[in-house]
Structures are given as structure tokens and as C-alpha cells.
Length: 160
Image (tube, one colour):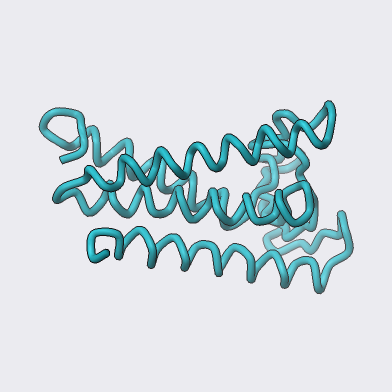
């Protein structure tokens, strides 16, 4: 169990932060309501994304979409668990996989509860907007970057 300490602690922290921030957003904002935080750069907005990242798979049958995206999330979590247990002496890679797992679980909870994911961070320059995202998406993105850099920095290009 000690081997999975980082995975459990980091993942649970991300899930709690993700679900807490989403609960705050849904409690205080109406759907599509936006609050300007940094003029011309950053808003808090309440939207729901029925698809995957950047709205992929947002059209088509709702039940098939939910089933497909839930299945992909569960498969990813299984893969992360299997890779995680083979890691030896690579703290950065362990943290990276933990961030990705926590983010995947956070968004999976939304998908199961609502059939879509709550997004609320809106970064933009002028009229050019990055697709809205959330804490779970941020954790996944940061985790992927850490994983790439930790693997790139290892001797064989594989986790130690």
C-alpha cells in the first residue's frame, strides 16, 4: 500500500479540489454566466461540456457518448494503475500519473452525475478564447507535461 501513497494522496486531493470548485461555481453562477476576473484575459464562466476535451464527441447520441467517454476514462485509469505499479525511483513520473488519474476521476464523476463536464476557467486574449476548462483538466494537462519531461530526462526514455 505504501507504493500507492502518492497516487492516492495526489489523486484524492485533485478530485476534492475539482469537485469543490465545481460545486462553488454551480452554486453561485447561472449556466453561461460569466464574471470578468482579468479584463481581456481571464473570466470565470459556468458552462457544461457534453463532449471530451475541446468539445470533441459533443454531438451524436447522448447515451452512446456518455458510455464511450466513461469507458475511455475507466480504461485510462486502469492503464495508469498498471503503469504506476511498475515505476521505480521516478517521483516526477509518479506525481504525473497521479495528477492525470485525479483529473480523470474528477471529470468522470461529472460525466456519471450530469452526463457532461462542468467547465469554468475561461482564458482568452481579446476575442480569441481557449476552450473553457476546470481543475481536473488542468491536472491532466500538467500531469502530461511532467510525464513527458520526466520520461525525456530518464536514461532510456522509459520510467525508471
